[in-house]
Length: 334
Image 1: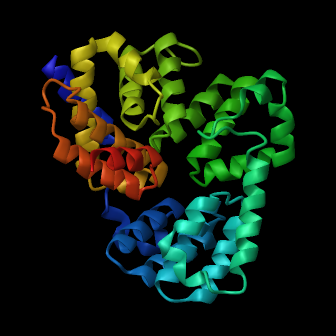
Image 2: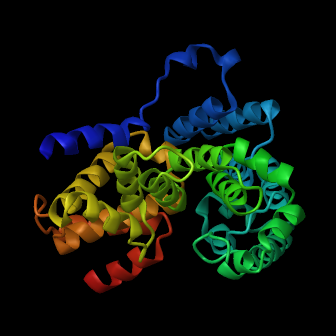
């Protein structure tokens, strides 16, 4: 079983390994490569260079609201308020709805005193209001939307082409929603699986769970238990608080003890992989760190002893990425 665990670990983190071979050919960089370049430059504190990489990417194709938001943050950190406001407004135009995140994001603190700031907050609040008509807190379409056959109407209102463009711009949320569209409305298993895989590459929990289920049951793809186990394990590592489907599926594959140790080993491998932060968004990374912290707090994996000190450390890191449950845990432990 140890060999199986090692094989699975290598497969699980394999998708987080990138080559830098193309970096010497700047003129042939793809949109996604430029975004990755920008992330590395940001981590080194080269904010202006990182923002310019985003601008080069936007010349190739339009980005999603997250990419424009990141660009606004970079220009703010670089001290260019005019450009920061420009890209933040574009982000709002494209659907930015993270009101509390926007208020508390220190990267944009230089904008708080500008004349435009209050109007931007008002527009983002309106975006959130519209978003909440269709979506629950975890980003999934509300059951009543699907139950009352409103999914097709939603796609028509939002614009199918716009959804496809956002999915093609590497938005995991758009990719997952497009997969749902091809599941329930324009039923197409091939397209459903294609977009689930795209979203799963970004460790989107719902996509990982749905893709694992598809491989396990052979719905839309050939039955492949190994692929199912891999996607269930990835999903268990980044599962939001209270979401246990993927882990219980792992338990069915491996048994409770092996499943717990495999999940723990995979979480540690992901956290220690330098490329993980480039792939996971803040929400998903916060979930990963929270889950790792909870395993250290409870001693849930037999190969890894309980360690409250490490638990606190990972709860702190999770809280920095906005995980509210981690903040509550820290209040209890400290």
